[in-house]
Amino acid sequence: ELKVEQNPLFLSMQEGKNYTIYCNYSTTSDRLYWYRQDPGKSLESLFVLLSNGAVKQEGRLMASLDTKARLSTLHITAAVHDLSATYFCAVAGPRSGGSNYKLTFGKGTLLTVNP
Amino acid sequence: NAGVTQTPKFQVLKTGQSMTLQCAQDMNHNSMYWYRQDPGMGLRLIYYSASEGTTDKGEVPNGYNVSRLNKREFSLRLESAAPSQTSVYFCASSELPASSYNSPLHFGNGTRLTVT
Picture 1 (cartoon, each protein chain N blue to C red):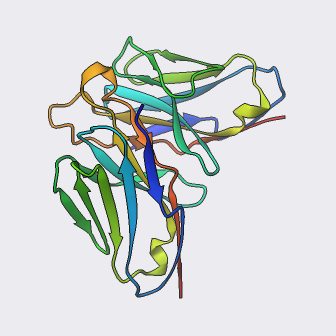
Picture 2: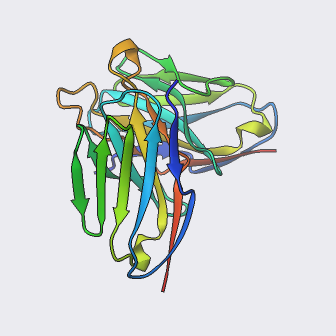
């Protein structure tokens, strides 16, 4: 059974600081996603990571994937208040056995950026 | 461009009542999903449909049934609601199967369900 662990679950940052959210998963996978959720809202796709060593950047957020370590990171550079949200990683099951369509989500990281 | 549309947005049920949550997507996606979100639990998969005509159980299927009515629509039914089913329910869709697999899930706005 695929398990996905995120840490930290809560993160309070000052504006201008850097930090990293970690996502570990337990079994082989070929796809990892990062999502953002604002309070009371739906989930918005941020990044899709498909291969070992993949790195994607959008503004102050950069995501990377190490499939050998089964680890993805979401790095925040010079945080601003607008980045306050809950961030989820989600991992797809392996292609065999029909589980590839299922995404297993981490519990989410609630990020608060303070002035 | 509506994307994924869920109805209703809010619902209050009494224990034992039944209801159906509706979901429709206009992106011609193949696969559709129902997740529930509870505080501190992330999102947990209830059922999914990899293609029209197929449905499969996810992590927490007990107490729910689904119907993939056609390619656009995927409904979730609670036959006899229980307080433990109080949650926010999200429907999602995806292009998968797709050759590139570069296809995130697109989520609806959610249904907030309270069972008293």
